[in-house]
Image (cartoon, rainbow, N blue to C red; front, side, top):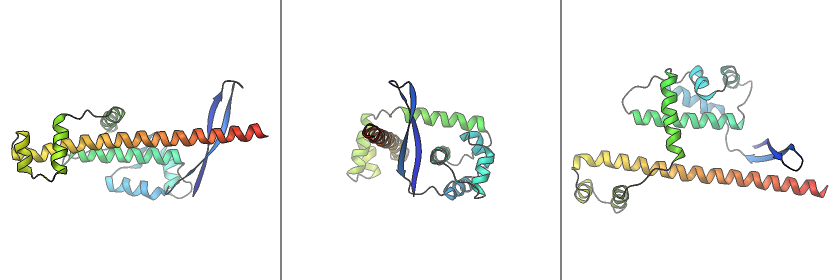
Length: 197
């Protein structure tokens, strides 16, 4: 399915906003992906509304099949659910009360700050990943790093999380660059069309 939306850009020469139609291929905007994740996490629509800023009436109309999410709405909800999944993962066995919106927003803000700055990888992080890549067993890793074997699992978990944050940061940067390039290309093509006319 193709998605079309309008990008407004201020034209300094004309002192007006110019609209550019941008086409993007969207693989799957099935709202059931959002609703099934909500159910699986035990989230209520009102909590999703409070956290996303998308009205409960809008969410209800989409849930009932009367409307569809726009691409930006879908991405907001998808990212929010990814973040909430990460919060739940970090909490481990500690139950999370999603209705405590203030506390959840605080945790979401922390994740956003983490995403905005790539993690610093220590020499120990690099050594741990090198040992894992070589197929070292926990006893060898403990010996090489001078830690107890019982602490290796936690060390691997923490190092893996920092590496994953770095990979996510790089992937996001690449995706943002790709989208920006598509917008610039569309703008360029639109300006070429307008100069030919």
